[in-house]
Amino acid sequence: MGLLAQQVWARDPDDIGKRARRQQLPISQKESQQWLHRLDAVSTARDGCPATHLISVGDREADVSDVLAAPRPAGVALLIRASWHRCVNAPQRSVWDTVVAQPVAAQLLLHVPRRGPQPAREATLAWRFCPVTLRPPQHRKAEGCPAVTLWAVQVCEVAPPAEAEPIAWLLLTTVAVETVDDAIERVQWYACRWGMEVWHRIVQSGCHLEGVWLFCYNASNSS
Image (tube, rainbow, N blue to C red):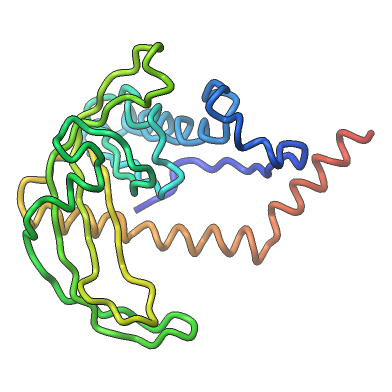
């Protein structure tokens, strides 16, 4: 697990409240562009280590159709936590419903450490996986966006306690998932990104980097 590129930015206060028009903008004018920049950084790193298989890992903000459909060199793959109920070429129509319709491939026990007021517990996780073909977004059909075939892996807590937030991940990956061991490995890959989350939280909250950047941005615009 490593960090290949870093982009420091903060939202422009003037853009607050303009979420409704995001579908009308090209991705170059959206915050989502950052995920394409990061994929480019991974692809560039591949040039320097052609024998290494690199995986670009993203959280739910990275569930962007342009990222999923972006061309990638051989040896560069994606692993992204799903956020949207994307349409698929399957009877269930959505990627979430398609994976839920699959038989449980395995059940594994996971120790969940204490989190705030929630005590530690043992969680039973059900694992499902299958290949899916994502349809292009409805509002972008005129652009000729391609369908994207990849694999979906779901980890869902069985009978979680009422007072706890249940564990539920749906991962999309371009790396084949053909066995339970494959599915477990993909989830382990995604879990590794928590170390990066801790690092970013220290930079963002501990060092107040966003506040410093915004102060400099406002100062430069007022001068």
